Length: 254
Image (cartoon, rainbow, N blue to C red; front, side):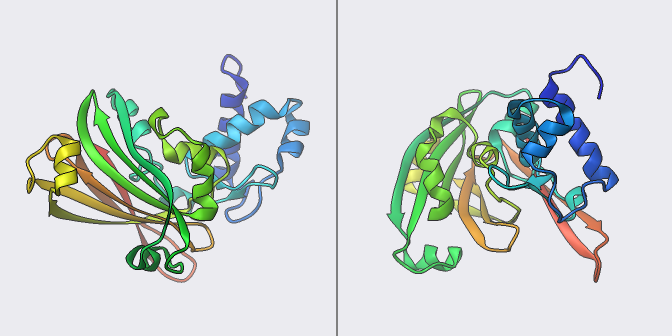
């Protein structure tokens, strides 16, 4: 590891290299925090920061009391795939913001229960925010999390930044997401939050997120203001043991 950078940056680079080289095989457990602390002669702080970075990048899942697991097909996953609006905005030199309009435990409606594959009436965490770019409304988020995951967000201030980063830093298993894109007319709530006329066209992105076991953990709908952001879909082919599978990475573009 090269000197001159903070230790957790150097550790993250070392861990990435081990995953790329297959030293930490895909689908297998990486060394525990205790083992890594002993190997590198450091405290838990830098090791935890490095592992949190890899979780945010989508290279590992889990941690915090158990050894993290290296994701399968890590090269095909994109950390920018409509994951963190905050990280995307800052990467492109824009200033992200957010205003929370709802953060509550609510019973799942029949429609939402079907989407999350839970029983109607089961508790979920509902989160609604208006996201801004350089102070201008850019999209309206509506997110629902199964309660085992959502209860962690009761400790989170949604006006402080990225929901995904908060969950990943706490070891949440956010493995894959499926996105459906279409155009919709702005509702009265959309119009009020996004400063548009009711009926104005919006780009809607519906996302279903699963953990590494394939269980659904989140369903969300994002409604984008045209002309503020666009969404690019990039298809990538990668080799798989039994068949050729297609991975779709979705990026936001200014």
